[in-house]
Image (cartoon, rainbow, N blue to C red; front, side):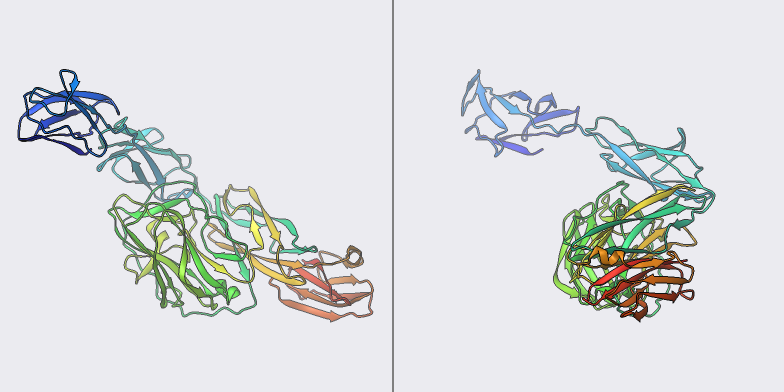
Length: 570
């Protein structure tokens, strides 16, 4: 509370409201004894304070908030009196606050025998809250953190005893985490090794599906990303030194499920490893948070040569004291290259930073990250639910030596997305980008194709990358091909016969009059075979030496129109 002053001829009368709940408010005459005490009332209560002795006054005055309403003598308002006087004061009392605490496990699900650390994130707990930890309802430990080896089904929670006054309760019980412990490993299995889709109308849409099955014993935790491809060869960088051991006293906020940034224009492509925000990190004692960076390798950037990096999306949970976006060029596989841009930014939530100088994508590696400084108790750096991608969780204590967030016990990726603008846009999407699959269960993903604005008679290729905790296959790549044809007569398509399909080698093709050429493409958009068939009505192809997978046959008629058919080689 503020101090409000009423000036007199000879001395100053003032009062200081100490807003500690259920305590006494003391009204003093400056350089004189205490004159009265009053228990702090609720907000906007009016309190009469009677002066204990006569004072000479010049006039009644109020502060800018008009808290002192009047001075009275014998019930009559006066501006100056030598008699005893009363002051009616409108109180401004703070509301009581409720303490709360949320806990987070360093890993869940977890393999049998692996230790797990639980971290609390208090609110209204004061400077020195204390914690009691419970497993399955039984007390197990005191302390800020709790680490143990869980059993499947264990339920862990904490009770916090706070040190803050003005609270509705001195204790708060946290959320309960049920541990999932597996004595086996997950095995990811997909229903297809590639996807090929044709759209035969302008600005058309189509839908396919991708099934993820867990053929192992442990719970499968997965996340997906879309990688667009072009026929540009990636630029190989030198192998870097071993990653550094980063010594940082890092703590998670324990936020739970969060959000993704606002959708961009369709002309924008996002380079990222993360899914929606799930948590945030900070140093226990605050200070310089070093930096968090991400490496987008050449095989990710080479499809977008000529695009411009114009904006970056970063999730900031608690506002830091200062923060700077940094973008570096190619170095090695583990070290940064030349600093291309450094730009301060502020804000919380999903922050979109417009680069003061957009950067052209040349097809080489690019690193995007930020440095920040924050106060103790803050958790500024947003991250997803994981699992960590080795390119998406870089962290450094000094901006020079780099390690991984996973090495500090947090399997997650930083919420950083580099947005590229160019001539093409996102035509491939999924209905979900992360999830968990129990042993011997499966999860179906819808795959959406959108040809709005795409050039006709062209091929578009991409990869769906499935990252998971399958130790044998941490990344599954599903090549995707979209063929767009406009102005096709359905009768012409129906006149084309391809059989048997699927085939184990020999493929019979019947074609109507007017087809001049047949081309065959693999799932990467590479031409594998072609034949001039002008005047022929049937041909036979021996494909026994072709690798198994889904291929695209493209039939070009005498009008220059392309017709597409899928064929599967077993």
